[in-house]
Each structure stands twice: as C-alpha cells, then as structure tokens.
Image (tube, rainbow, N blue to C red; front, side, top):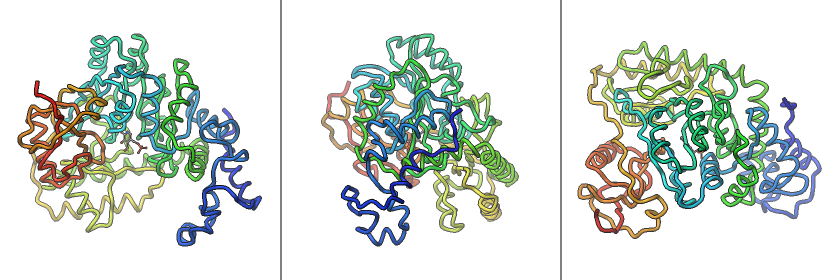
Length: 485
Ligand SMILES: Cc1ncc(COP(=O)(O)O)c(C=O)c1O
C-alpha cells in the first residue's frame, strides 16, 4: 500500500495559492476577483482553487507529476492497475472504455437496462450492440441483473464480440454474478467492462457485493461523486487487467475530454480517495447501520415494502447493495412519482428517483440518523393517512424491443414525426429515457412495439420526467424515415 494519507494534488494547489502568485493565466476570474457575487457566496478558497494546468500543478491530458501521483494513489486504494481522473462523470468513462477497446463495426454484448451514456458511446464509436434482456422483477416493476446463462448464450452466438459490458450494481442495488461472467468472457477471449457508477463505496467494506476490480474485470468507471464523497461530475476510470493498454485508454480519454479540467473536481477526488482509504470502513459501517435500520423500520409500516437482501437468488439478483433504499409504494395507492412529489412538497425530503411503483433513497457517508428518522417518520405519516390496498397491477418496463439499425446509423438517418399511437412497427428515430434512472425505454434504431407505446402512454399520463423526445408531451415520436421492413 502507498501512503494513503497523502494528497499530492490538493497539496500542490494549496501551495500555489499560498505562494500568492500574480496570475496572468486563465481562468479569467483571477482568484475570484472577476466574479464577486460567486466569490461572496462560495468563499475565496473555492475560487482560489479554481486554477488551470501548469508545471506546478501538472496537466490533465498528459499527467506526469502531482495528478499522476494522485491517480496512482487512487489506483492503489481501489486495487486497480491504473486510474484516470474523470471530470465528465462516469458517462465520460463509459464512452472512453468503448472508444479505447472497440473499432467501428465491432460488437459489444450488453444488458438492455443500461444507462444512456453507453448508447452514446456506441454512437461515437460506431459500435453495434448485442442486447441481453435483463431479468424483470414483476412484483416491483424493475429490471435487475442478467443471468450468466444469458451472457454465455450471447457470447456463443457472437464469438467475434469485443466485450461484455455490465452494470455493478444497478441503480436499485442489484448485481449480477460478475466474477463468473468475467471468467466466461476471458475464456472466450473477450473483455469485461463495467459501469460502476453506483458502486464506489463497495470497494471499502466487505459487506458489499463484489466489485469489478475484485472480480478481475478489465476496466470499470466509478462515480466517486455519487457515493464516494467527491464533487459532482468527478469520477474515475480504472484498469483492472493487463489486457488493456493504458496508452490507448489515455488517447481515447483525451479525444473526449476538455483541455481545462477543473482542479476543484480533481482535488475533491484526491481528498475523497484519502478519506475512503483511511476512514472508509468506519464511515461505511455507519452507513450500513443507518440503511439497515431504516429498511427495517419502513418494512414495519403497513403498505410499504423496502426491498433488500431477500431478493438474492431471485429476479436476476445475485447480490444486493443495502445502501440503495428502494421502497415500493403502490399498496398505499400512490405511484412512485406521486410519492416523490409528496415527500418533497409536504415533508421537505428529496429522494434520488422514482418510477411508476417505487421511490429510491440513496443512503451514503453523508447521512445522519436524524435524516433517516425523518424519512421513516414521514413515510409513517403518509401511510397513516392512506388507504392500504394490495396492489396487483404492478406495471413493469416493456420487453426491450428489437434493435434493427445500429445506434450510429440511426443517429445520422433522416427522421420524421408521427403520432405515437400510429408508430407501431416503425423504427424509432430518438432515444426516449426516463431520467433518472436514465435507462432508455426505446433507443433510436429499435422497433416500436405495442407494449412500448402502451408503456410510454402510461409514463406520459403519470407525468414522469422523459428525456430525448422532440415532442416532450409524447403525442408524437420521431421515427426513421426509411421504408418499413
Ligand atoms: C447506471 C449509471 N451509469 C452511468 C451513469 C453516469 O454517471 P455520471 O453521472 O457520473 O456521468 C449513471 C448516472 O446516473 C447511472 O445511473
């Protein structure tokens, strides 16, 4: 282990500030003097930290000293071979992974309940998806992990595919059997790439599901900002095996990255890594305690179900991250959207996301007992004023439709608007996503089915947040202007 108490990048920035240098470099606010209102609100230290690449502070696109040292410390803390700081979130890391291992025309095998950044990565790289249907939990109406059996089937039918891309864990906390899948992919000469946007904390406590690096995956990206304590947008791309050339990854990263990476974001990564390495276990023991306490209390409330580890072994759930506090609210007579709204408007609580049937609260190292108590008490209050009914009609996402035209070709084709109700059998010209969680209901190039139209109609009626559609009310949808098959 390297000395995880060090913060080389943060120290270099502090030294630069204390040197009181006269700055003739960007950013043009010059230590905050050029934007007084923001400096007044954030405070001088924050604006002083907002500097740019220079010899003292290293260069993001080709790090050789303090950024490199900070990245090496991070790789060491996570058990990875190499690490790259990301200032465009895990979205940027996902696109980099795809661009660095695939050429245009290559295939990757992926579960269809992926985040839209993977689709965007395939558009950029001209890569073709081979989709695996995730297992659907009909009781909760959510898509979970993929079975090893389905992954193996996809590998055998597409032996030329470059990689299998997995999510560990899903937004709702569910993991697939990553270790076995890594072994299978390697046996068939494929790579395993992992979207660990929701898994940073899992590296620092043994009571969480297995991580990508532990499983022997070749590359992964983690959103340190989501559950690791760093600032929003700061993530990390890690290499876990010798099958990946760090130089190719650096090239792909530079293709997609700014040349003015934020030192506030990068310093927050340096500090968050130190905190996780030194205190992570203790902090996460407390986080787990809070999440378990809240789950237990919520499950005593008539009409609510906070799902957890009992899902393991069923519904495509190999293991479960208990800090994802998903609560099924349907038996109280509410949709998840209504419950989210109620919690925000009447109880001053904001959850991470809602869907038709559930709300999801993320419990993390920043939470306190009083916050979890407030959530539990608010839910008790709501339940006491509601009529409990056993809700039988859980609405699940539709079976993911057939992908006919690859994402990049669909992106560049001509499109036209048609009424959603008349679009069955046509190829979608846009990728329509509920956000969060950011999983597309239909992707550009996929065949619009009756179930997709019905599901989108329900989402529209329930006023859920939809992204990607030109007509945001979804009366119309863009389709590819190409003859029907
Ligand atoms: C499963 C999943 N992957 C990737 C991302 C993208 O992460 P980021 O916001 O760090 O770009 C998200 C964001 O919510 C996500 O939920």
